[in-house]
Picture 1: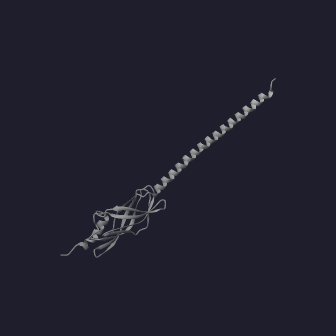
Picture 2: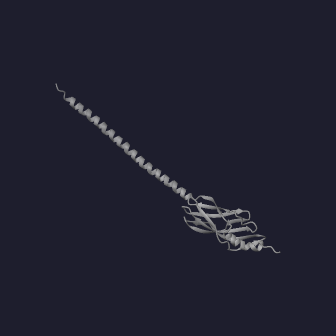
Picture 3: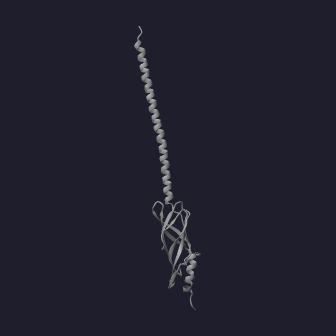
Length: 189
């Protein structure tokens, strides 16, 4: 006796097994595709995050050079001290634009404060800041440098205080101040 149903039964079982294999393969391919897409998107996200962090660091960086310049914009003298108006040259050596909002400094015999408007400096740019200078003629020009405190606004909108040392000895400020101090420091015999 030949059972004709047996062959149809085996074909049905093999069709179910092959359908399961196809379904598993599709599921594995979907998982692999989802994994690859996740890796690509994750790599892109990490790269964007790193770029954003680097940009924030560049925007917050301040590299500033300050040089005393002319102090011959008028002045006054009284009892061994003088007051002058002058300039401070600023150079932005950093990677992003900055705005120098003001400057001040004080040491025995010398004081400096800005009187002009804030100065926007592009990277590599220079500018002048108007300053008021006060010197005690007898002690102002010591070998110690003057520590300037500069208020600087960076590209990220943050205001930071930056210090920069400048030598008064040998500077334009010393030359211009000494010409006004000399009449006060000479003594009569």
